[in-house]
Amino acid sequence: MSLPRPPIRRFRILLVEDDAAWQHLVSTGLAEHGIDVHGAPGVARALECLEEVRPDAVVLDAILPDGNGFDLCRRIRARIGELPVPILVFSGRDDEASIERAFDAGAADFFVKSLQWKLLAERLAQLVAAAQMRTELASSHRRLDRAKELALLAHETARRARELSNSDPLTGLLNRKGFLAAAQALLDAPREDPAKPAALLLIDLDRFKRLNDTLGAAAGDETLKQVAARLQQAFRNMPDIVSARLASDEFALLFPSMRTALAAERAAQIAMTALRRPLTCGGLDCVVRASVGLATTAAPMPAEALLAQAGQALSEAKSLGGNCSRRFQAELGHADRERFDLEAALHQALDRNELVLHYQPIVDPRSRRLSGVEALMRWQRDDRLLSPRDFIPIAEETGLIYRMGEWAVGEALQQVRRWRAAGLEVATVSVNIHARHLEQPELARAVSQALDSTGLASSTLELELTETGVMRDIKRSLDSLQGLKQLGVRLALDDFGTGYSSLAYLTQLPIDTLKIDRSFVDKLGESGQSRAVVRSITALAQALGLSTIAEGVETRAQLDSLRSLGCDEVQGYFYARPMPARELPGWSRRFDGAVPEPVRTGPAALGRSVGGAVDPARRAIPDDPSGGLRL
Ligand code: C2E
Ligand code: MG
Ligand code: MG
Image 1 (tube, rainbow, N blue to C red):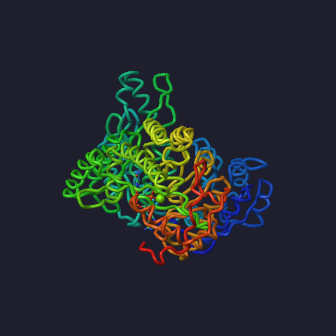
Image 2 (tube, rainbow, N blue to C red; image 1 turned 90 degrees about the vertical axis):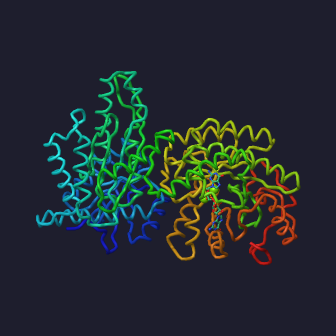
Image 3 (tube, protein in one colour; image 1 turned 180 degrees about the vertical axis):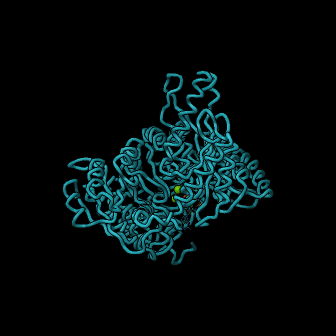
């Protein structure tokens, strides 16, 4: 008995998509993963192609020029009958209504348009394999796959648990005792794939007590029932989940087998999103927010212990202000103590001026000119210079990141003023901001104060936010980013390509720059896939009118590739490591001397200097600065 596995042979899909650019992106993206794509631009052609192409799966856009994807999905299903051809709806939006419509129309899965080709290819491979296996099963009636076995086991244990009056009378879910019994049975069951962990989500409603106190217990009960229904609805396609209400407003879900720990985090997001839609409590519309603690295990362990780990993660999520999810990270007692010390010292670091910014040049690879710098934080702790990796996570968890971010904006702008006063023109400075900081109104205030006190043009400042952070709560991010954009500052999505950008939202975000993550640049020489990703990102950026910066460029080969792929700017050890502010003028002078030709004025020569004055004396940077330089 085994889980559906991706087929080894190449397979073919029919892609119903009217946008030629997307057709191209999907075809090249999936070809890398052994999937042939046949395109059809609309409903009529798609129906013809079914016969001609005989696809293993159909991927269709929700909006088509001659009809809509959901109706087409229904028509295809009717036409192919029992044939094992799964349909995946590929949509620009991931709102609940679209997802529901897709499943109602007979789709097997739903995928938000993004450049995650590997993920899409994996999903398709699994859908095709599962569809094939289902037909095999139907014909032989002998083999039960692993998912079914787990579903039965879960069902049976849940039934037994209920018999033992282990259910919660209010919601009909299991209660704590029933949950622990069912969870334990699943955790003890032999795992078919040890790499796939079990995941426990502990969900606690934020400020439920207040709702209960204000609207009364009956409204509170009604809310809890709706929460239970929402959670079950959100994961209705996963019949092997064990769900329970453990205490007043605390719910638990156990997933017996997750593809990866990342998939478990995604499940936490799905649960939070499902609850965020307004509920009716006591006749009023109210919005319920939840915090989620997550723990995973790939080995059998006591269900109580896994629950305790999820509980610890949940406390962390609560201490961050709620409305977020945290995953349990195992730590040693000794490590706990060290961390506690570090946390206490970090609180004082700001007041003691122990934080410093180093600056890494950002270069235009065609004109070879310095177009800006990125400010990167360091902590001078006694005689050690700590890297952000050592203290940013703690700053995030304790909320210190907000003060630190505001300090960095002020300090970076002051530094640009000091450089300019000393004759070094730095057109833009980029400062990293934690995505949760966006929700704090103080950020916009601190930014405009820093701009006022330095008198610099607002376009001198670029704020970098990680793609993952922004996409975590896209609706809130959108509002906050629009507020910042009104100040005139530039906005960049950092580490782009590693997260799950919904393209529909990407077009709405008021951003200026995509920073291509180092992981793709790293493998540019070796992996055709990285090349394809970088090509897709630059094409996407061009289509949206955004500029691109590649991070982590270390070799000439990478630089050449990036240049040929149309990347606007680069940053990396190839040109310079991050350096203390005082070293930048010297670094820049060394390049000044290298190319005597004066800089042309005019937009092409100005790099990213939007609205900012550019020193005409700036000189080009030689292609290979490492010769003769200590880098
Ligand atoms: P990031 O914003 O993506 O910054 C780029 C990181 O890549 C920096 O690491 C930089 O030193 C490193 N890097 C640049 N070129 C190369 C290269 O060619 N090869 C390699 N291997 N690495 C290169 P750093 O300074 O350690 O910072 C790490 C991360 O910490 C940053 O990633 C950013 O997410 C965060 N961070 C740094 N300063 C701040 C800050 O002031 N506030 C916040 N919220 N986060 C910060
Ligand atoms: Mg950055
Ligand atoms: Mg980055």
